Structure formats: C-alpha cells, structure tokens
Image 1 (cartoon, protein in one colour):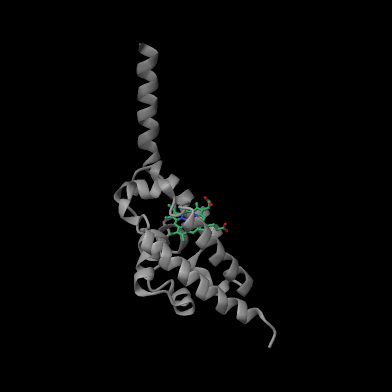
Image 2 (cartoon, helix red, strand yellow; image 1 turned 60 degrees about the horizontal axis):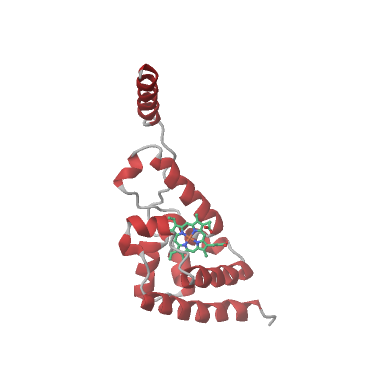
Length: 157
Ligand code: HEC
C-alpha cells in the first residue's frame, strides 16, 4: 500500500512537471495555401473540405483544440502534424515538382477513397471532419481533372 501511494505520487509529480514543457506550435498566419488553391482550382466546397479535414495535419497552420494545452496530448498531436506534413504539405505546394504533385494527387485519391484519411483517431474526436460520399466523389473528380493538367505539363513541347 505504501509503495502504491509513492508510485501514484510519482505519477502526479511527473504529470505536473510535464505541463511546463510543450512542443512548438504549427502556426502560420495569412493565406498559407494560396498557391495550392490557385493551381489546382478546387470548388469552394472542396476548399472547405480540405480546410476542415486536412489542413490541421497537412499544412503550416493547425487549429488546435483546447486539450492541446495538456501534455502529453500536445506531444502526441505534434507528432501527427509533423508526420503528416512530411508526407504532404499543402502550404508547400509550390516547392513540389510536377511529378511529385501528380503523385500526391494520386495518393490523396487513394487515401480518401479507402477511408484512410482523415485519420480515424481524428474523425473519432471531430465527427464533422469525416468526408461524406458526395465529398469523396467531388474530390475524386477534381483529382482526375487536375492530374491531367500536371501530366500535360510534363510532356515535351
Ligand atoms: C490527424 C492528422 C491528419 C489528418 C486530419 C489528415 N492526415 Fe493525411 N496523414 C497523416 C499522417 C500522420 C500521415 C502519414 C502516415 C500515414 O500514412 O498514416 C498521413 C499521410 C497522408 C497521405 C500519404 C502521403 C504519402 O506520401 O504517402 C496522404 C495523401 C494524405 N495523408 C492525405 C490526407 C487528406 C487528403 C486529408 C484530408 C481529407 C488528410 N490526409 C487528413 C495525418 C493526417
């Protein structure tokens, strides 16, 4: 019993100590996805979909929930954001090659059609970020049209 008390006290102390540390936030003021929007021309509805369901992990600006102020949740979220951005960052679209853009669009279609994105841990907490059937259909159509543009751009003149 005594040992158990000591352990619980230890856990509480560590938890409190953790609150003094937090990872750097992923925040970028302004219109950070302007190039992506201009180039790929998604419908206004699709732009909203990206904003609500993807930008939190795939752009330079995350809209943080209140519980991000609690460690270790903050570290867990930062991990998702860093990993998501590494794979795909809509705020860095101008820095991708035509081949990369074409490939990323292919991946976006695949991940969304298979229901792998947005991540299920995320849609579980934010139910409104789950894509509807019609949103997926619109996204697939947009991917097909946009890929043609990038593929034509790749062909020699
Ligand atoms: C909660 C964070 C989160 C959200 C929200 C999210 N993603 Fe992801 N995404 C990740 C992480 C982490 C990875 C990398 C690991 C993996 O594939 O599971 C990833 C990987 C991807 C990849 C794979 C890229 C590659 O190179 O293979 C694509 C494409 C993608 N996401 C698209 C999307 C789209 C489109 C949305 C919105 C409909 C979205 N994601 C929403 C976290 C997220």
